[in-house]
Length: 104
Image: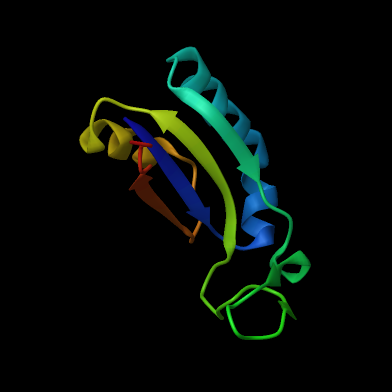
């Protein structure tokens, strides 16, 4: 099953953790579970569309930490995905582990 590790943190923490995140990605790759990864540009580059509303710049909600990036992994179950998430270098932010909806 594929899982996405969604990383929420501010830009300063993301930049500071970049070197150790490269090592984490290398560990995912070496284990054969990494299927993709991406860092996101800052929230002020976002444009949000809501049905029936005008476009507006910035993220859709004011939250603690913005979505900063993601890792797409293959894991046999949620416990395995959570084990990888616990290894992800993280400052004061958070990581959300969510299974992908597989196409029927």
